[in-house]
Image (tube, rainbow, N blue to C red; front, side, top):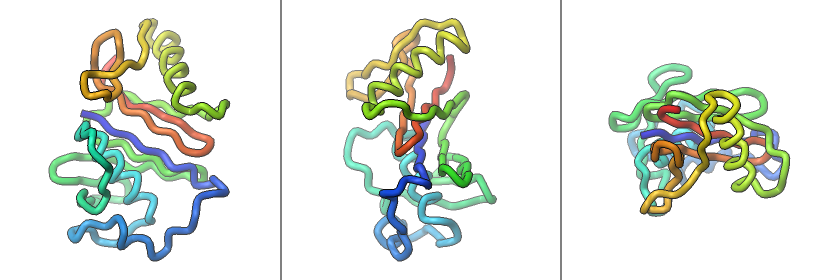
Length: 161
């Protein structure tokens, strides 16, 4: 499965999370990274698991293996940080793409951009639909897709085209 999460680090509404680690850290986590590295990694792992229940970051251990790579009970992932965003990818990610948000309706906009991206990059007509659990999949091959948006950014990750 696949998972992705992004945080716009320049979002003026983003609060300093110093001291908030205790709300998201699993007992096995070692505090060696920025709060948002843990948050996005945990969210990406949660999405890999394709759960429909609530996101409980304290239930997801994250072990950073290197500057960018992490592990969580066998799930592997990567954190990509820039001055603008923190992005985590987890699971079997074949492709991912980051877009700039242009409208106030991120959920609708990212679906439209994914449709256009697949057509332009792979000449595949597809759309994002929901599986029986209400989780996102691609219409052309029924494969899972993971979506995220925050602030100025939106992104997706998928297993195959």
